[in-house]
Length: 144
Image 1 (cartoon, rainbow, N blue to C red):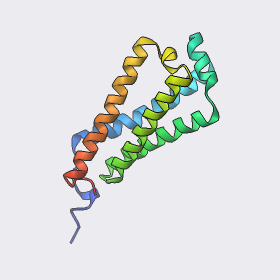
Image 2 (image 1 turned 45 degrees about the horizontal axis):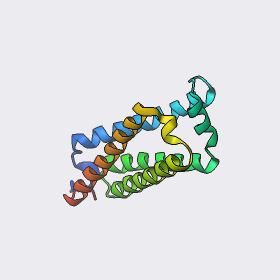
Image 3 (image 1 turned 180 degrees about the vertical axis):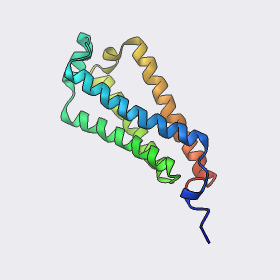
Image 4 (image 1 turned 90 degrees about the horizontal axis):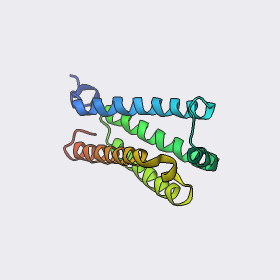
């Protein structure tokens, strides 16, 4: 007899699909954006250029780790694994700490400009909502 309780045999909530597709799209879009910026295809303001030139190899590595944590969280969520919560949560903490440090020491907020700050806040809100939703799925036993 087949085990219908395994993640492969349970129906995924529609929001899991939305979150998974959002994070895959975001990962690819962010990678393309970085490639276009660093290739010179996208013009930058002086503040943006100064900010990008201030980034170290460590800063880029942390950005990559954060992106991989979120992509891994999305894959784990798609597979209905409880590890999704820990991956998303860790990614969220990394984003918050990095953003605060860059805002204080690297001129991140001036490089973003007014609309960019709103976009960043909306993005942080989305990540927080995904963490909350994932925690609710874990509590309800949807994630194993």
